[in-house]
Length: 315
Ligand code: AKB
Image 1 (cartoon, rainbow, N blue to C red):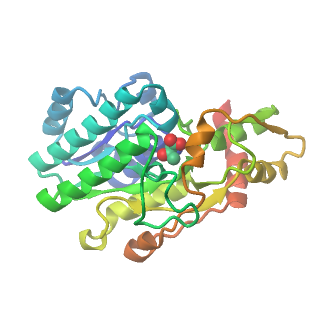
Image 2 (cartoon, rainbow, N blue to C red):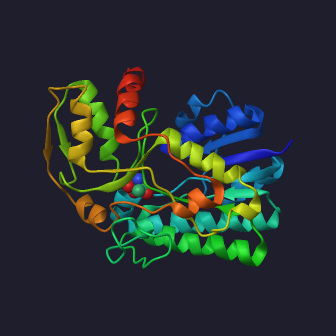
C-alpha cells in the first residue's frame, strides 16, 4: 500500500491537514508523525508514529517500510521562536528540508509538500500587494530559512525532477489547535480571550496590518495545489497566497460586534519589528491564474465562524 507521510502533524496546520488527507485518501494511507507522542493521541482516524525529523535513520526507515510516496513536511521553528535560538532554527528548518528532498529523489516519490511563508519578504520588499517576484531580504532566521528552502525546492525540481510544491502562507487562523511561536499568533489568541471574557493585550500595534487566512481556506489551497496537474504548477519556489489583511484594531472590532464588553490594549514587543518587516497585503494572482485559487472567508465571516465553534474546543 502507498502512503502519505505527514511530518509535524500535530502542529496548527498539520492537525487539520491530517484530517483532510485522511478523509480524502482513507486513514490507512496516511501516517501522522510528530516528535511528541502525547500530541499524536488525537489522530485516531489514521496511522501514527513518533518521529524526530532530525533522526535521519528513523525517517528513512519509515519511508522504506511504509512505502511512502508523498511527504507533507510541516515541521519548522517559526518566526518568534526562531529569533530566540537562531542556529537551532536554521539547522532544523534547513537540514530537515534537504533531507526530505534527498529522500524524494532517492525513493522517486510522487510529490512533496513544503510550506513557505510571507516571512520570505523583508523590509525592502514592496509592502502593499507584494508581488510574486520582488526584492526579498528577510531579516528573521525563519524568513531566511524559508527563502533558502524555496531556492532548494526549485533546484530539486529543475535538476532532479522532484515534484515539490509550496505555498507562502500568510498568518493562519484556526480554532481547532493553537499556533506555536509565530508573529501572527495574536490573531488566534484574541478569540480565546474574548470567549473567556478576559482583556486582551496585543503584542502588535493597533495599526499593524498583516496578511492572514482562515484555516479552511489554507487547507483548500494546499489540497488544490497538491491536486493540480503537474504542468499547471508553474512556480516551483513557492506561490504567493492571500485571503484577508487586517490590523489588531480591525480584528478586535470584528469580535466586539459579538462581544460588546470585550476590551483590548496594545503593548508591542520584539515581534512588532518582525511584523514591520513583512508585507501588509499580498498579490496572489499567479496562484489564481495557474491552478484556480480563490478564498472563501473574509474577516467578518471568519470571526462569526470561530466564535460559533471555538467554545467547544476550549472545554
Ligand atoms: C509566523 O508568524 O511565524 C507564521 C508565518 C507567517 O509564517 N505564522
